[in-house]
Amino acid sequence: MGGRIELALSTAILLEYEEVAAAMHGPVLAREVMNFVDLGTASGFVRHFAPQFHFRIITADPDDDIFADCAIAADAETIITEDGHFKALRNAGYKPQPIAPEEFIRQFLSPS
Image 1 (cartoon, rainbow, N blue to C red):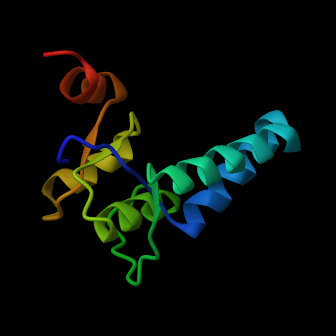
Image 2 (cartoon, one colour; image 1 turned 45 degrees about the horizontal axis):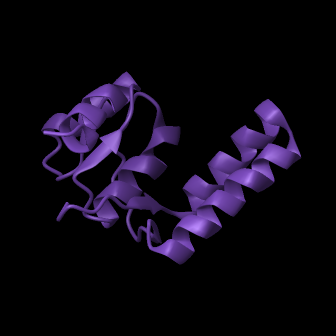
Image 3 (tube, one colour; image 1 turned 90 degrees about the horizontal axis):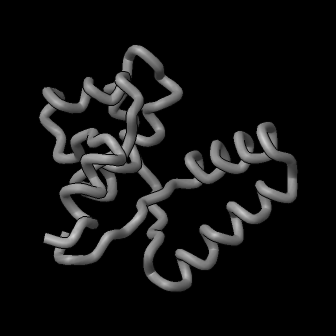
């Protein structure tokens, strides 16, 4: 990580976030989510990746593969999730590993 946390996103993930935000909370929140992503991109906190390969690791829920594909393409260390489907990454031979939000905070954001 080099002391810096970056969020990796792909177009497929952005579309998923926008769709879910709009469905759950309406178009205003969806636009706010996209504005946050734009701000994060401008500040270097968010990086966009275009995975060229579909690894098909999350067989229990193929819709989750967009997140695994992006994390692999980004050479990410972790995928922050509580979704048990991502346990498939643990033995798949790829660098990104699933980590619960609380564990991520404890390991990477809490004062030592």
